[in-house]
Image 1 (spheres, helix red, strand yellow):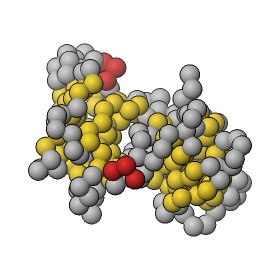
Image 2: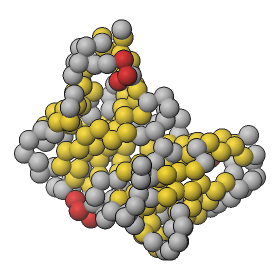
Image 3: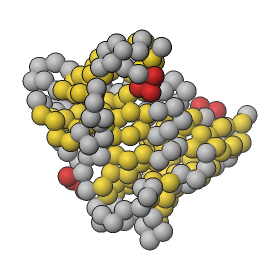
Image 4: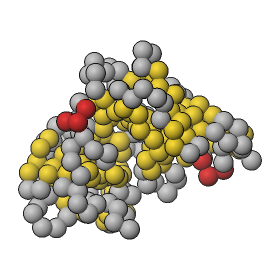
Length: 116
Length: 113
């Protein structure tokens, strides 16, 4: 069974608009962390945002926010005021096991295209 | 900048040769993780090492692949007798302790001719 599912292979958004990238996950571990990474065409993996399973509030980092809905097991990334430089591949990832966990499991990714 | 350093950034090998990928973790980090990314896919966990010890290698192929993290020097991912299917981006990450955020290097892109 897929642990991390990203159902949108590609997304288009107009510059300056907001966009939501979907991510659902599957785990029976009560302690886990959720991550989003950005991979531009140059190939590096850039950490964007983190949400812990016990965090009460949704994580935010600048223009990035994570819409964490625990009961639905979803962790969507919202990018506000899109910029041309946001065009990239975005990966949702999960690490189970709390403080003892180390394996990060990645989804297949969503390619975001920002239009001028 | 004391980030995770991987080299080389690009590596080209012919079938049957050996590939050695190096990873220097962030300063103060003693936990290293290797991931592989096939084209158009997410990263997949290969192996987790601490200094001089392999902790978990459940994601690493049993044959031809090996990893080490010696007391001195970088972590090495070694692929012997490479085949075309080994072509991928290999990422290294490090953390200060287990459970802490993993910081990724820029990856090594391995191409097999």
